[in-house]
Length: 86
Image 1: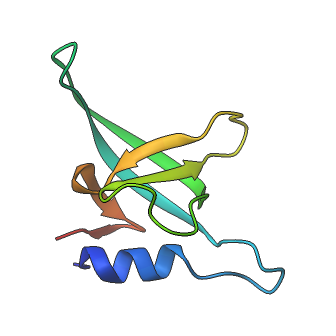
Image 2 (image 1 turned 180 degrees about the horizontal axis):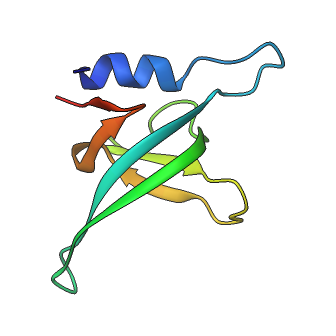
Image 3 (image 1 turned 90 degrees about the vertical axis):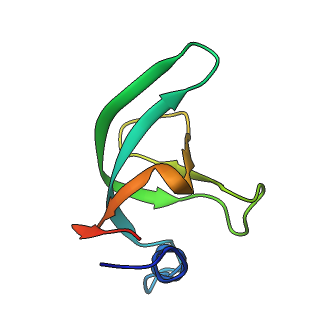
């Protein structure tokens, strides 16, 4: 198990080139406007785009092969690198 603060520190780590490291997450979808969600998505080899949090609970990540960034809510991240998030 990993705490949210430790997860954010790991996400912000960089490699030798100065780019953010890749990580895997499993999230639960939710859309309050359309009353949809509840599906589990597994995102592999994504990179953190936001240097500092723009919002209190949202992060932007970039998945390989996808042009648009993906917006993640911290409370909806269930697993980070195969570790359960508390």
